[in-house]
Length: 106
Image (tube, rainbow, N blue to C red; front, side, top):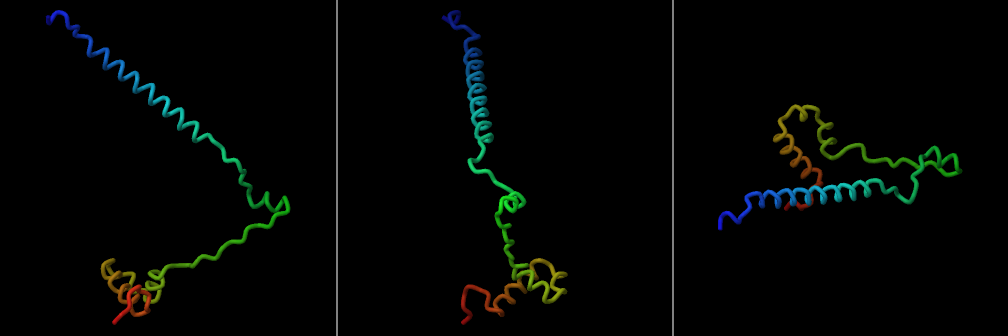
């Protein structure tokens, strides 16, 4: 009965599964390549082209120059030399003194 079992049979299954996985990976790679090659339907034009065609150049938005933490550090330059833990402790106190915290002080 042991002579009826072909010892190379599991190898065929393994090779078949590896080839199947390879084919699936190639299909996935092909679909991803197609997705990356899709061009948007609207063409983005530069500001120079917009002005050339009679459009107005976009205005730049003035963003705030810094955060509250930057303001805190610039008020007293010696705070920059403090360790981070001490900086944040002083910053929390500074925020509470300025009323910038979410919670109310009782």
